[in-house]
Image (cartoon, protein in one colour):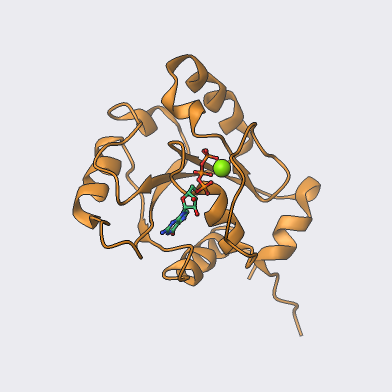
Length: 165
Ligand SMILES: Nc1nc2c(ncn2[C@@H]2O[C@H](COP(=O)(O)OP(=O)(O)OP(=O)(O)O)[C@@H](O)[C@H]2O)c(=O)[nH]1
Ligand SMILES: [Mg+2]
């Protein structure tokens, strides 16, 4: 019987990955916590990401890299290593850190993830509009890393993109 590759096996075979995804979003949007949830790790107290983290299957980037204009170019070169971009938006925030149509300059498919759906302040419509304005043309996933809402769907999507199941 064929062995079904799991998400965490993709994480641990970092050097031999056939493809990778890159998470992009403002400071505190929930990127690192999301990766932990996808890896089924404890999601509490993600440490602030200081540098681009290539160690896993998903490339984790610090929010400053999209918030500060002069750092944005670093994301462009980092994106060369990724086949899929994941734009992360805190659904409780009324603003985004992405310039309009930002993601249209990347040739990769870009999906959107709205985080913190467990919060009563989460506004799905507003957050979706923010990501669409930023040029996110792909699928939208609504998640909470804390309750696990939407995490299996996103994990399955990523696994299926990879064509390894
Ligand atoms: N309520 C709620 N809080 C969340 C969720 N995901 C993340 N958080 C909280 O949001 C804060 C920031 O999360 P991080 O994962 O560190 O955010 P980040 O995008 O990696 O931030 P940088 O590394 O600074 O770019 C933390 O206090 C998390 O606990 C969620 O789904 N729901
Ligand atoms: Mg982080």
